[in-house]
Length: 436
Ligand code: GUN
Ligand code: FE
Image (cartoon, rainbow, N blue to C red; front, side):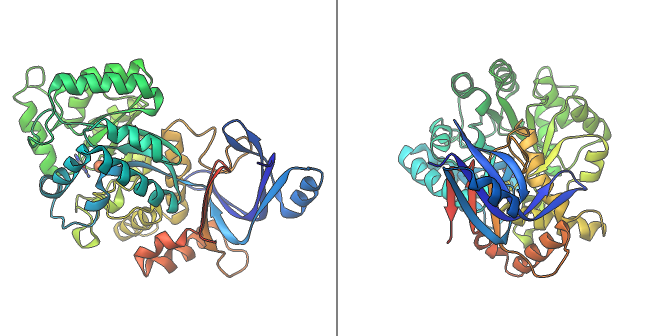
């Protein structure tokens, strides 16, 4: 492998909600390190030609008429739900009981899990996703096989289901605890302690898991306030549980189980009181917002509602975008971005744009995972990871947001084309997917 690797292209480089740079006819030059290629120079192509002339061992990837963005981070998805993404949905709790749980039971078979994870890993990488936070099934090997097959920076956890679950998925408390202890110790900061949600995971198991996660610097992920039915059910269950009879909110239940903190990612968080939001902010707990999953039934979502990202941002809550495969029907973060912009624009014109959506699908996600110094956008010192979105739209002096709008709008006419949109994808300059 060559010592230097360069990409010649046009790059959209997300910096913040409001700022996305457009690097036109630019080069990213990277140098080989132990774990991949790191960017050492970002400059106009001409300058890169001069620089590389002096280097004996170099390789150039020519994507000069294309648009490249950083690889996507998907901070909430279930890898074991690929086949229920497009199943009929009426509401969260029925969809879980009728489709999702029976399907997740199949992952008991190691062979089935292995084959599915290989296939799923290829699919998400083809969609330009290079990292995120992922839920497996209750089975230990659903975590092991994900780590063996996924290309990118993933944290993964086995869901914990110790109560209010069907027999075929129900775990004994002590077994669930043992599994968390074992996997948290084994995978450390790559592990995510994953109570499915307060309905299916008893508080003792959650407390134990939180302790183990903290001991091993593991992440914590779960679902919070996705639908109103769910919240009612949660509150009715905990009213009967010793030590929780006086809890006032869903967030407070997790808080009492010591689940909140800077390494915790809560999925959804649509229906939260001011007090709950404040507590999430105080504890630096993050939210993964899943617009395609929360979207109306006719858009193949679960019709859960719309996360108020403005309120969350105002309260300095850390959040990023996520697909919630299979509550979310689509694998591609481009679909997630499109849905985020469409739903919020419908609610309030001008409230967001694609450039903000890109930031929340790349650098913001990497930041939630503590990877902002090595990934998430194009900067000197970060790994050479990128996703090529095909031809550069025509038109001179277009701004980043206009370029993204053109690309996404064009594909949005046929939503399933997002997968075809990504033509080339690189993770750390070492793993590649190419349609050329
Ligand atoms: N809440 C508990 N489990 C799930 C799940 O698998 N998907 C979604 N969207 N919400 C959940
Ligand atoms: Fe989910």
